[in-house]
Length: 169
Image 1 (cartoon, one colour):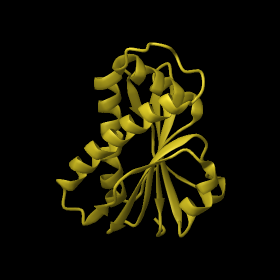
Image 2: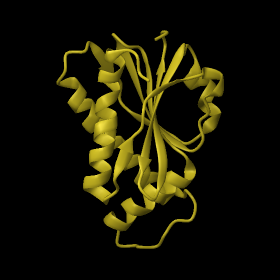
Image 3: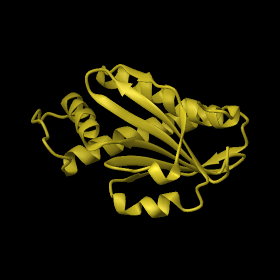
Image 4: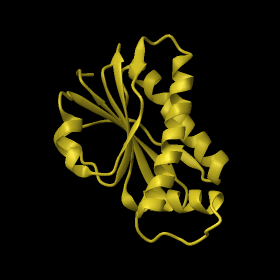
């Protein structure tokens, strides 16, 4: 359970925009799960993520993190809607990665826009996309606690919104 309302105020637009964007763009229904504090030593990152750094009142990094199977399912839905080529990707090739990155970055931009309308004294850096789990140590540098919100997509899988915080809850 998320114990700090400021942290939830920062995370909520990402959860809301994930649900809204996936439903409005590619007809996928998403249900946010209960947020929880995750142990740093148990945190693992597999697959693909969009990362946004936060500074100010809440310092850390927000990850919208997809395991490969979920990333592939979302990417195929995106490509099916956007491209003339209706072939289904069976692995996260450049075409699928680019579709997921573009879509995820747009989702983050919408969440940041929503967040900027609130006076939370939190600054958000430009988002960037990672698909390399070798950067996990770099992502965890300075992290004191992690909040995770699972996002369940009907008939597809789960992705996660993680808040890697540089201060304890």
